[in-house]
Image (cartoon, one colour):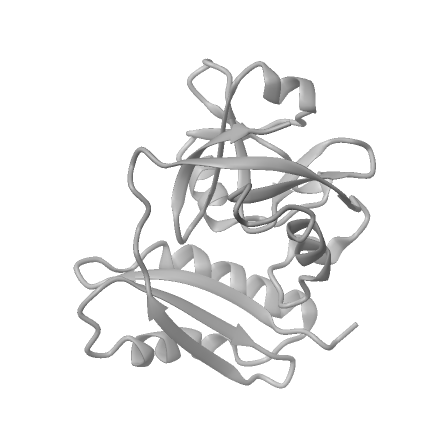
Length: 208
């Protein structure tokens, strides 16, 4: 399958510029190299050009297609309040631990859109997915983290079939998180968080 583009969604703030830019660019270049996409080296310049003159927070979306075309769009972004708690539920839709492409952030999002459509947006803020073995993987737009009181968050390993999220990578590198296979029973015994680089870490309540 080649009818997709690589994608990075970043947060821009005038006082600090792009949040986690180094990790976003590293993931983009790594994915481009593995899939044979050209043009990743132009991403940073295109991002900087897109936010010229910005005076407020922005959601910045960059895509890179197989032909090396880079496209950047921006939209006003309002950060979540610190006390935000998202309502989450698990989808019947399952990810496959054998699907290597889910480990790369692309515009091929059919399975995530199918999962998201299982519940109205008025009822849940995010939908989570298991793999074919019943292991916890990720949300449709977030990585999953579990606080079991040990002082280090747990997050599912890539081998379960999930994206190497930028926030997830940062927390692991900072030793604030470590990989561990998680079950639904594990989630019932600890505090749940979801998060991504755009929104940060968000407390979550699992609805059944």
